[in-house]
Length: 316
Image 1: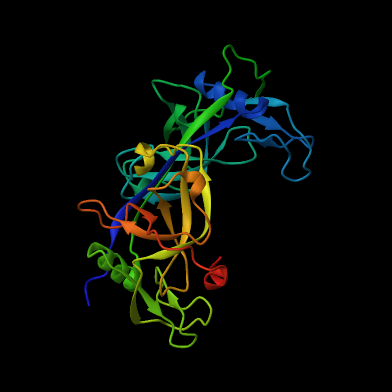
Image 2: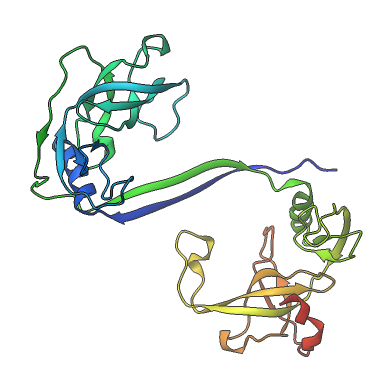
């Protein structure tokens, strides 16, 4: 059997959100080297601030200027910093209770090694040289042996307040399709579609998952299906996709569920070679491959009569 496939995969997108008066004031304050917390009715100071008391659910708006110094409440050493982390050399992740606050703020501590980090350690903020109104305006914390900072009331009013942020969400990981889908992908490279049959219910699943979703038993018997099939259901796409291989496809186009001959599960595919408003349930289609393509580019009508509804109704 051929080796199981694996490949690096990155999922990335920008996350945009608006800020309310409390979060907006907090991030604007960081830009101005001011750290703001919020005061609850019973006198607790929460940093980072929240808009509602986590205990009583009351709305809270009273802002307090806390100090840039504090105490480490707990920590963990990061031996190998990753892309996008605050520092590019080994550092400690720390929870810091800033002077005057009753909760802790998570950030990085720049320290020469884990031997110098301990609970109760005094630290202070190291500000970023360029600040934009984001948590990264705190470059990190650093060891500190000076005086305790004092609290002052703050109105939370600044010129040009921050009203929204864009955060880049990204996940890097290695994906492996497993034994069954590795065989499926390798077969597609030879312009063949191969599923697996359940030894109990005898259904053929494409793409295979290595187990029958109905019976729960392992599958291993390979069955070649198609290449022709039947459109079971479909949708008309009217919005051009961004950051995908579909950038060159003009809208509207049709994306359909296609039950390949011999399969008991419909797969996805784009329908081409026919006006979008002529695609219909029961349409008989066949795959169209591009030069060097490892999977069908789209499916086109075969010219056969439409399939009878009873032949595919269980695959809707």
